[in-house]
Amino acid sequence: MPRKPAGEPDGSAGESAESETAPATDRDGELATIGTTVRATRRVLGMTVEALASRAGVSTGALSQLERGQGNPSLQTLQRLASALSIPLVQLLQGAPEPEHFVVRAGHGPRLPASSDDDRDSQVMRELLTPSGGRLQVIRSEVPPGFSNEGRSYRHLGQECVVVLSGRLRVCIGQEVVDLERGDTVTYDCTVAHWWSNPGSETTVVLGAVTPLAF
Image 1 (cartoon, helix red, strand yellow):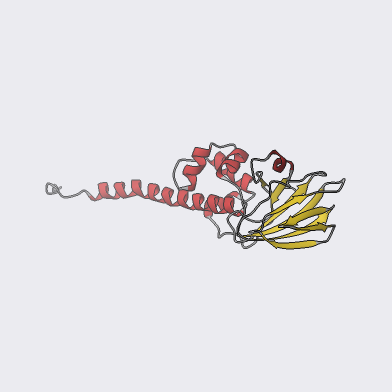
Image 2: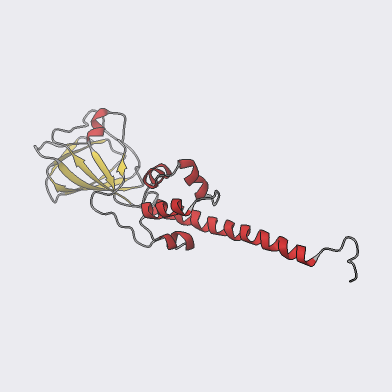
């Protein structure tokens, strides 16, 4: 059998090299798809990396790495992530376009932090009902009886519309005081100093729409 000239590549060796590198390339593509799907779904759900990592039982670092298309997640990890994101595992593996709709089940929206370091603000429970980072922000708030942030009014860019779902709410806008009851709505310019109080004996539930985003 004739010998190959020195320096000529061996065909079988070339095929072997290609077969070894192809899976790595495929794996990179799969990781990129998984990472993109995880990140997009997480954002639509209004979840932070930390919140998703905690819910799925994975480290924040590993999740951040995966969202960048890196790492070597196990199938068990991917199953936990899919469960935490409420999507089928196959969707996580194959990818899918961002949902055109966003559903928040009652009581399951992300809880927002207090809007200031004032202890009184921590008394109000705020639940985000719209996707984090979207163009519209709707917040459901529960204001306990006796609450008031008078003396710590807010002033920021934008406009806010507040609808009282139950209870009573007093809204002070500049020098004007508006008392609202169930079904009442007030819209005001947020560049004017404003504050809320609950003069009633029951928890007041309000729905507020804000633009631009306040949180």
